[in-house]
View 1 (tube, rainbow, N blue to C red):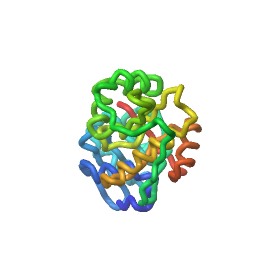
View 2: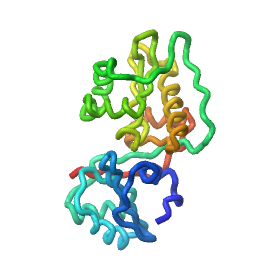
View 3: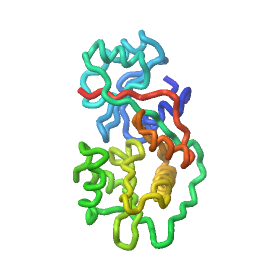
Length: 232
């Protein structure tokens, strides 16, 4: 199946194929693949018949990301579950890297384990299920970009699933907000992804209007279709 028909919707699948993905099933109207690093399974289909046939090739999964209602219906019928989250994709479709400026007294550096407690404490407010040392260590190993005020960690952003997933984990301490640090961090992560040959994309929950506005401000293109997350 040609994923170029919607580069915004299929940014996650294209990125996985650039990383470490195994194609579990493919024909002209459907695609099923799994990212080896994260274990995430992705699927899409162009009609109901193709979706039903393709979903029949799924043996097991932990997290299954559907890209259309055809797959949603086939997944619900086979596994008797419904999706728990739905997200918009936002993608930086340019190729030119950003010039990133920071306010006086701030600088960028990669975050290491010396700041693990700070990272977990900040991220726990947003995503408590992911705010643990094992998950954040994978992000640090790939490259968790921090903005510092002196030696103090003011905020950070990275890439989920050890580099194979979407940009995210954006956190800025409340005392340093409204200084443009969030936008600066996102631009820095976009630059990192471009340098590494990855697609700079994010996944935004449908009700996170503040994040959607930030993506537009930074210059990302927001898709008009959703992805749907199933958990078994």
